[in-house]
Image (tube, rainbow, N blue to C red; front, side, top):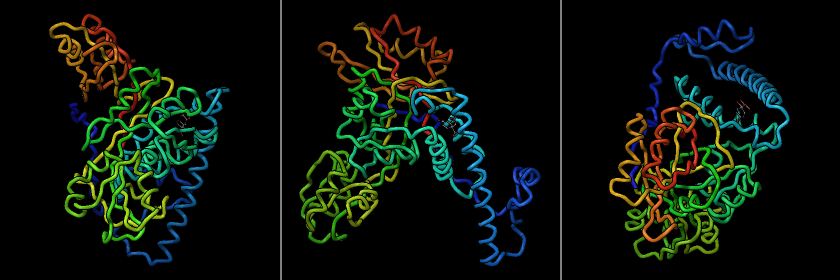
Length: 403
Ligand SMILES: O=C(O)C(=O)C[C@]1(C(=O)O)C=C[C@@H](O)C=C1
């Protein structure tokens, strides 16, 4: 598997140096209501605690009024869409991506992009839920990183459906019991989650989004101490992400692989000599204490999840397209399949091959390309594949993950 950066690198947190009110703030002052809070010039005498809290109270009132106003407009947008069948029909991932990108572009600190995106995501989630909350299937049980990925992408105003396998997530979305599903597809330390890619060989579902989640692992136990730990439960992927730490601190403990980190936490709760490697949220769900964390070997350990649904959405302006390509058995076929993307100025972020289940030694290539299938360059590149590809399936075109 190869993956290359696509320019979606996170902006470094902007400097938060003291500065006079910006032009943006100056303009806002003119249009704001008379009782709206006014930014305190940085060189003014510092306010006392009571006055600072008074300012915050004023700002909170103003924020609340604006959120209520926004929710009313979102409601009207919902009505403008006409009488639609279900909540899923009101959801517009391309619009949400545009809103969040603008939040990032406008951000001058002191809060970082990730925090601001999370706040705005929650506002949109609540606005959408006025129609009806979306139903989102994920690899459960509760407390997994998959559940965190669901909240990161859809906010908390949803109905989460914890399911027992990646296959079941696909099935529940296909059957319409869930509006969307969220499944892990690759980890920056451990590589591809092959069971997810293999589902696309037969599934008709489309990829409608991606979520990147920084994954922090913790050692959790009933006692909260390393002493006396004889066995550790976790998912094989998590064991692999914490190999060096385990070698150093628990070289003799038995390592027992289980189906999910949440299941590991559930088992660790039954005795004092057991521990689990899992995300910190599992500690709250299963009543455990953190012995140590984060304990992953690489500090940039990140898992990428896919959002799967039943339809494709229009371009957002910064999209990625995932393809599944079966190539013809002839010299240079792979080269000829990839060349049109470069010729049309489209960058390839990832290529992965898996047994295609169509015949002995026949492979399916999973390819991620920057761009959207409704864009001219991508359409032309796809048209040029026909001579060297046996079959091309567009798995989805979706907004590139934000913050
Ligand atoms: O713009 C829309 O289509 C809306 O429904 C509004 C809104 C929002 O709150 O901004 C809410 C839900 C959609 O998924 C996208 C955006």
